[in-house]
Image 1 (cartoon, rainbow, N blue to C red):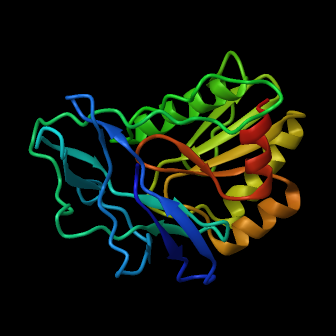
Image 2 (image 1 turned 90 degrees about the horizontal axis):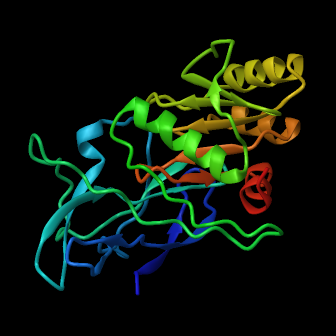
Length: 239
């Protein structure tokens, strides 16, 4: 069974129970990063791609593979980096080494049962857009395409009834980003969703809550993590 431990957000002091994700080793055994309960979680304020991976050893076959560094999206909008023990050094993969896809995500129970969401590991900005598109399709949106209007940052995706913005940059989404997405969606009579790799500024989160905009943080496994109530509702019920 994967490890779990309490994690406190340094921004809002809210405490969460974090369970380490399990990844499939090539031998078939589940592998989880070893968590460090003596250390504190830190806020992710700047991303460097090579620093987002750690080496985890499989206890069954002794194989070492690269997996995403464990993170958690706090409802306050802060992205938390979960501490791990020194046995899992934070090192980047050797040049030319491919990273294996992350674990399957099992959706919460809903009125319309869905298959488990299968993410795509995020290594590039294009992967982030692909992950968001796959998630939208998993929610039930069809015929996903590039949006006609280019957003203030990132990439716009559209489907019947929804407009999504995917921000794969290392900067948290701003209040202006949220308001521009909402205004564009209003002109198209669509709902809107925002995906961010680096989280959301406090003002952006507050405004999204007021406007009912679902906010998701993309972790490096490619699994969107809901960070507000509208996102929780959308994740649970689907489109």
